[in-house]
Image: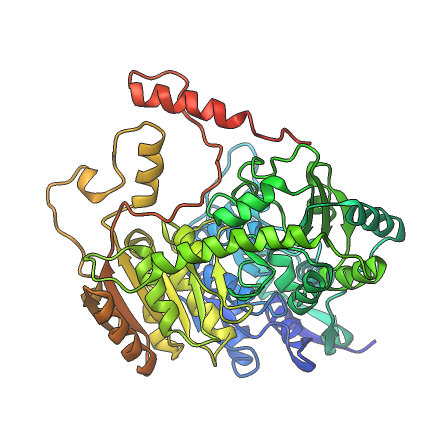
Amino acid sequence: MKTVRLTMAQALVRYLVAQRTIVDGVEVPLFPGVFAIFGHGNVTCMGEALEAVKDDMPTWRGQNEQSMGLAAVGYAKAARRRQIMVCCSSIGPGALNMVTAAGVAHANRLPVLFLSGDTFANRFPDPVLQQVEHFHDATVTVNDAFKAVSRYWDRISRPEQILSSLPQAVATMLDPADCGPAFIALAQDAQAEAFDYPESFFEKTVHRIRRPGLDEAELEDATKLLKNARSPMILAGGGVHYSGAVDVLTAFAERHGLPVAETIAGRGALTHDHPNLIGPLGVIGAASANSVAAKADLVLAVGTRLQDFTTGSWTVFANPDMRIVSLNAARFDATKHRSVSLIGDARRGLESLTAALGDWAAPKTWMQEAAREYGQWKELVDSRTAPANTNPPTYAQVIGAVNRKASERDLVLTAAGGLPGELTKNWKTKAPGTFDCEFGFSCMGYEIAGGWGAKMARPDDDVVVMVGDGSYLMLNSDIYSSVLTGKKLIVVVCDNGGFAVIDRLQVFKGGESFNNLLKDSRSVTDARVDFAAHARSLGAEAEKVESITDFEAAFERAKAADRTAVIVIDTVAHDWTPGDAWWDVGVPEVSEREAVRKAYSDHLQGRTGQRKGV
């Protein structure tokens, strides 16, 4: 057996470079790049190894370990999980900064490879700089924090251990059922240690993501349920996008006459005017989709984990006889709430299901009723997003202006605050796969960082980041990253004076406005941030506008700009698009406030419509 002597860090990097995949019939790197911030725990070994392959696997300098992790998440979403970015940090705070990003990847079932430095395996220098010591367990380091947010976790203390660890990490990230982040801690001395690795370990490997087929008995059960249904509907989740099943799902709905609702992750599967679409479902969904779901006797859930914002904390399916047929690659998701499971790939599963159904179609009157509901919803969206001279404008009016000026292939992206609800409800999808609302973790700060990663994955399309003032203040340094790397973004900052959507929830549940809006927070000044000036200081073009007319003109300038452009506009803090479903949150059982006591009583009433696990 031929061997080559390399340090563990050199071998790890060489292995990653050798991994390939197929995207749209073309062989490409499985790991197209690395986000890295170097410190004493990774610069001397991992840095040396990455520099040697900088033309084959480029390293991009991050500004913050969390944001570079979020950029990797944005890349994975935009690349439909077909390519994987690597995030490399030092030990201690650098590693812990990535935990939030790993949580985002885990919640959203997205592949990211996190590599962090660790303490010394030999323990001779302990305690080292940035080491957090545990008196009861000398083996614990901060990297153990990743166990809660990783699909695969390992610690490398000997150079030969990567021979078994790396293939398992890759296999996990590429598995459609187990897909999620992989984390590997790299002891500092082990990174530097040399080993005679088999040359075969570095041979080019071309990976193809598997498409598991359906079990025949499960298919038979699901087919029987569908054929007996009188008011069935489809719920399209993020798995529809990741499986590349949009066209198959669309054809399935058309052939069998089924209304299609979308989850937040599944948003953008069908275009806004498609005759089978009934809008987004759930807490930040459309009244049309929620109304249809309340009557449905069967829900074909495709590629969704049935999160509470989708199910209205399990209140949107009001028909007591409703059954769920869940088509999902993950057994865990396919069996939730007594679902009749169809465990397999979404695209392949829909193909099998439509073959089994033959010429069967749902009653035409059911699809007509759903279409009428959606027609009324579209009228509401039209009125909410129409140009207006109100000053300041609403979120919906800003979204309408972006939608009118965006091209068919532009990707719109948001994550937290009031924008997810307003964007999910009011965005008129022009082409499938052009919508990204990170609401699996609803991570404040994802927006700009995720946009930077998404632009890397989609260099030929404009990426429009919509972010509130709260999220902008939490994490904005990747405006500079986008300028530095030439990955142009269009960033729309909607300033409503604080955390307005949480203020909405606080007041709705009987509380007093407190510590959310700037005006209700403890402060000694009423100063507001000049977001445009701040963005310009990071190298972007930036301007603040007041009216929708001026905003549309600014958006056209941003489209024409040769670098990241930021548009700032004040927006109304208390104007929200209706259509919501009920949502279960904790409301105080006892309170001195009459408003809280009433909210608690109302909340108990809402719970009477909740399906309790059945």
